[in-house]
Image: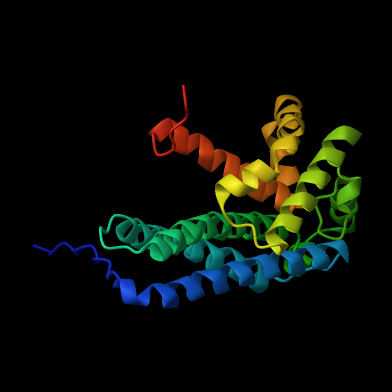
Amino acid sequence: MARREQPKRQNFYPLSDMPFLGSLIDERVQDLEQLQRDLAQAQEHQCVFDDATANRLHSVHTESLELAGAFDKQLKRWSRQKDLTPAQCAEVRRLQQQMIRYRAGCQHIIAVAAALKKSTIETILGMSDEEVGRAVLSGELAGARREERTMPFTAEQLHVASLIDAKVKELTRAGVEDEGTLLAEMADFLPGFKRIMDTATPAMMEELSHRFAGFFVFARVLESVAEGIESGRIQVPR
């Protein structure tokens, strides 16, 4: 009878390794956000990728997203220790906010990679001239300008999404990493975000998140807060 393979147990770090893990998380977040900027620039210049590149982007960042669970467990374990100094408590909270950006970055790149896989060099070479023409006109190919896509966005939706995107990026550059601080700074944008939520379809929200990385991060932070309130992790005054 075949023996069942036992699940691997996670090895946890001692508190003395917090600076090492913190620098590792910070470096990965920076790399993810730089890659998002690079991909956005490549798409703006209508670059076309090959299958290998699109597949690697998808697989690497899917694995990175799975790794986020290990980071979360480590940070949760540290947060429960009774001997944390105030500085260590603050650092654990900061790193937990960094993990929100980490997950958002991975999810954004995975979504971009999935879209790129539909219009790689190999895909285009396998199309007839008629199929290529239809794909370009519909915006399915990476070479087609995103503005030409047929998503029925209103001018206000695009304007508000771009403002949210710019503000989140401005706050990120200024070093704002705490979820509460970000929400406080973005309070004026909540009505506009709600109007988009009320008037956009799920496909339109996905497209806006694809176009505007800052909009995507803001949506993920709001989702995280909602989940925290529902689970009781975040206490709301009654």
